[in-house]
Image (cartoon, rainbow, N blue to C red; front, side, top):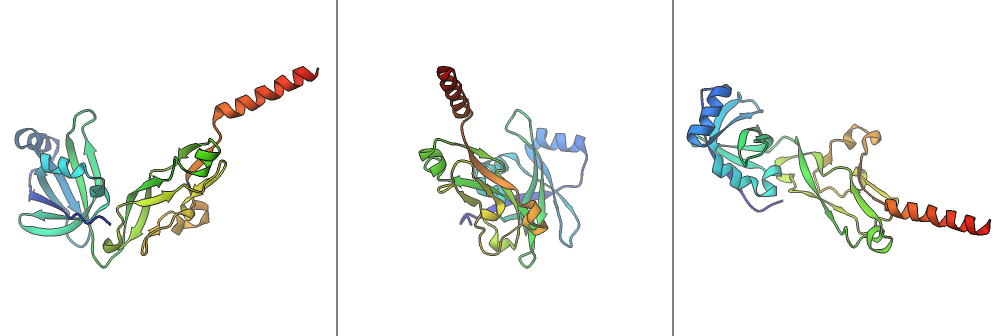
Length: 213
């Protein structure tokens, strides 16, 4: 887990709708959002655009417990959804999910692929790595939430595939996919033979056959 603490300072808002949200972003440089989940009612909030963008530059922010202070009252949340401008560095809206220290919740965390260039399938056998997924849906208590999960490709050879069941998950962390059964053990990454290599082999065989004739 990251040692950094993330704190958001927000204000409650009453006006809703697309028009109110546009005015909020344009006139006050604020981002509209919502906090939901738990036993409390959903709460409409707004926070400074520049503060949010600064936090979003840190990858850990996407998979970390965030303390959001709304009108002086703090509550623990995770970032559940984010709407961005398609071209500009602007945030349109964010969804924050309340979490309880004593209850498990589900979220997605990024996968960090390590030892790619030095893996046997790449360095020795000349293969190419293919990533099937870049994040994993997990279930855990807030205290056990990892910043990311490592996928070690050091011993993976050409033709081999790493599945979810091959990953070493931190203590207290479970894969949501695997909880549904073995049929949901999805591929994460594989090392394949370069396409050019297969073509070269076929070409060499054709050349040999032509020579024999």
